[in-house]
Image (cartoon, rainbow, N blue to C red; front, side, top):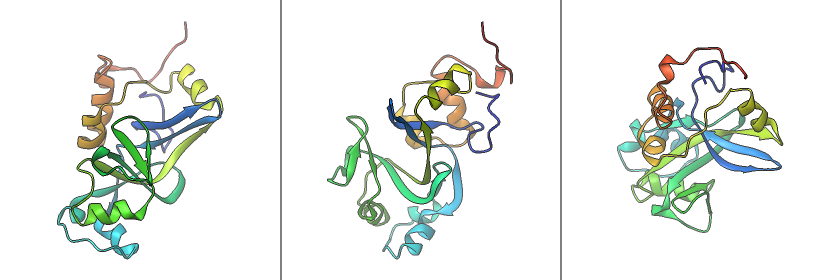
Length: 173
């Protein structure tokens, strides 16, 4: 919501990977960092040979474990190291998938993050009740083909909301 001024989550789109009675975990998917994939691969000493690695940003996935790499991807590269989030979206922490992406053999649709977001039991539910978040069904086009403010606006539009017209305050009836 526009009124959420938390420095980590202001105008963020978060893809929830897990939500249970124990808490929630997700990835901010609209905050490209200044780190390009080629830099990450070089740092990890992984070979890469595609031009895409020089222009593909690594995203800031959240304030927890900011050095932990996570790859959200479609089912074009499903392997034993990938956790199925849905029938078509997977999460991997394996460097094997980074090598595949760097060599042009990885999943067509992927989003690479450093860090993740997490909430304790009941915390996210309270933030939703406090009108801090809008909830929408995940959209793979927004997830893999948009970024930044555009993703935030497009996600809200899935609810028929023009986020730019929403006030910065909210009320409770």
